[in-house]
Image (cartoon, rainbow, N blue to C red):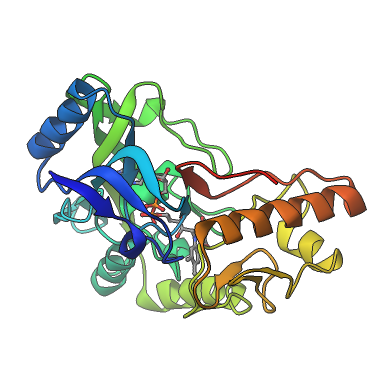
Amino acid sequence: MLRDFPLRDLNTWGVGGTCISYDSPRTALEAEESVAEVIRNEEKLFIIGAGSNVLISDGHINAAVIHTERLDSVQPSREEFDKIIRIEAGAGVPVRKLLELSVNEGYEGLEFLTGIPGTLGGALWGNAGAAGHGFNGLIKEADAVDWNGRSFKIGEESFKWGYRTCPVDKSTVALITSCVIYLNSAPKEVIFSNIKKFASLKKDQPLGKKTSGCVFKNPPGMSAGRLLDECGCKGISVGGAVVSNSHANFIENVGDASSQDIYELCELCREIVLKLCGVELEYEINFLGTFKKN
Ligand SMILES: Cc1cc2nc3c(=O)[nH]c(=O)nc-3n(C[C@H](O)[C@H](O)[C@H](O)COP(=O)(O)OP(=O)(O)OC[C@H]3O[C@@H](n4cnc5c(N)ncnc54)[C@H](O)[C@@H]3O)c2cc1C
């Protein structure tokens, strides 16, 4: 466990201060020990995967961070005369790697992960998806550590799937360590054609820039990006944080934005949309630390 650990390199916005402590367990047993230690120390716990859906505040943050990057095992096995593949994967495995595996082996279902830069654990926690597709029906089981630092299994029947909401009970689950995914075999042409469709949905996203994906959830029946665009938010900035000119639901760190700059810009966008459209945007991103409201 490392103390006063800098978090800037652990998130895709490239911002944030230091946390009380940092640990990066390699096994479920080590993850249990890491969680138990944070509980013993009576510290607040925050889990980081790829940090592609989180805003981390500036300065010193009163939390212990567990980073899942080394929970990275992937074990595929074929079942039912190769019609199905079972993949048991650690929570820290990049979803890109799972997508690559499914394409190479000829199994469909993960194409919705095209262009998503997160880990399996982070993607499950936020029920990441695209165009109504996600992990629902694909993840049959997960292993987790509870708030007493003990490992337990989460069966498929316990998942509650909703748009960008956590499907597991946050009051029980401190950390997801691994998941079991089942996929059906499919012709490669079908899989590639699906990937093309999902990739085309992303054509307006500012790829290669420092962002954290969509900042806000889509309100029922509406697109948050379209609302922000119609309200003239594209291009507005606070410090080094700018609303992307290609997709208004993305905020770019164009230089040396502080986390507070990004937060203030997010809040400014929410105020504008509320004032002009009467819609209260809900955050899709997660927050670690404290932020000043103006
Ligand atoms: C360019 C770009 C495009 C994107 N496109 C999409 C998209 O199409 N669809 C979409 O849904 N999202 C998208 N995102 C957002 C993001 O990539 C996803 O939400 C991703 O799945 C988050 O995974 P992560 O590992 O980065 O999670 P993190 O940002 O590290 O964490 C997110 C949340 O999950 C929790 N968490 C992470 N791992 C665990 C774990 N093992 N156990 C318990 N809690 C955990 C964290 O504490 C935090 O609350 C995009 C982001 C970018 C930058």
